Amino acid sequence: MTAATREVGVAWLDGVNPAVRILLALLLSIPLLSTIDPVSAGVAVALLIACIPLTGLSASTVLRRMLPILVLTPIAGLSMLLYAEPAGRVYASFWYATISDASVAFAIAVGVRVVALALPTILLFSRVDPIELAAALAQIVRLPSRLVLGVLAGTRTLGLFVDDWRAMRLARRARGVGDRNAVRRFFSMAFVLLVFAVRRGTRLATAMEARGFGAPVTRTWARQSTLSARDAVAVAGAVAIMAISIAVAVWAGTFRFVWS
Image (cartoon, rainbow, N blue to C red; front, side):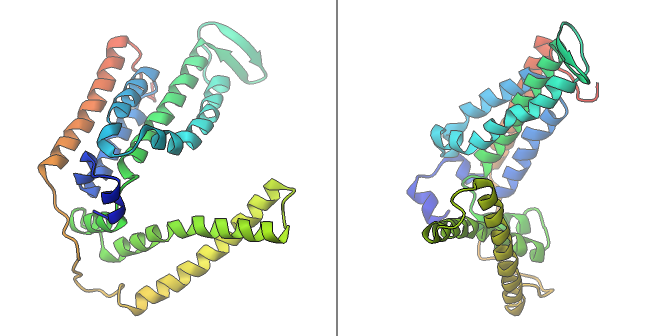
């Protein structure tokens, strides 16, 4: 458990193994990927919201991190609204686009499903310690240590991107560069950030190779990753959430496979 996590309190989900959290994400996503009805996704979202107190995150934090998804969700449903196979009452038609009862239902289903697929990721991985995740991937999932250490190094440098972006923005503002065209400024800074990332990655890879992180030996780990009864409860809870969601959709008569 990291110091930052201890400062904000220990939540029930903090005791779940990071490798099990990956399994939970799959259990909460795969059934929704096979269906295209709004009821199952809506019930799943409601049950996941009820589980927020177990994650240690506040509702405002979850909403803030979901905001980009909520903004882009209408775009995901727009294609279904315009180009889904028409059925029922037709409200408007232009060229290849047709808005009907079926397309409206599909658009709503896709929008709710996007939220249902994004929400588990935020709830499960917002407070995961990268070191504990690496230990779990190596000791529980049995992934190669070279791959695990590379992922760990990349994860630990993600926070530097935010600092680099803030520093570039302040530097450009101090020099009076790019204050008029926001789009051009964004792409210019994104390109510079990409250059920074490539250079930093090259130096980091060289340093890790020099320290023997890529050596073909049996590696030991400072933190032991084990499974507990709480992990089994978490898996059972994820299965129950999906079972209830699909059962309600079947009962309501809205359940539909993607390929049907």
